[in-house]
Length: 85
Image 1 (cartoon, one colour):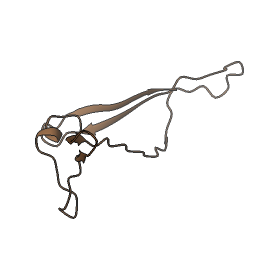
Image 2 (cartoon, helix red, strand yellow):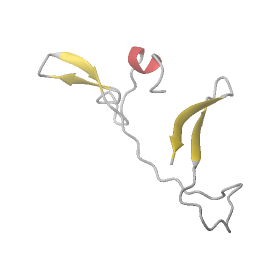
Image 3 (tube, helix red, strand yellow):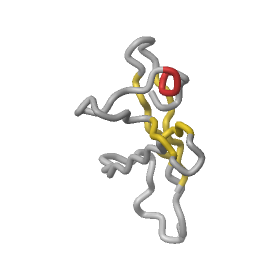
Image 4 (cartoon, one colour):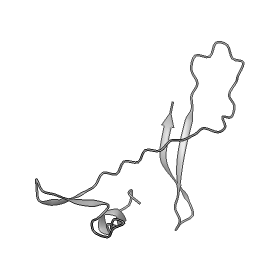
């Protein structure tokens, strides 16, 4: 939802319906500003495929991780994070 114009054009209210969740008033330049949203989540790796366990001289392994967000209206996946390690 934060990647679309809907977040800017129709800001949502907080749970108390007293303030906006997505925007705030900046008193320094007297303007509405978009609130930067930071989400931190822990992810547990359950399974790794095609990893050789008996390789003696392997110094590093490449791990690709994708986090998908299911859009409820279009029933398609949107890649949120693409991570190499």
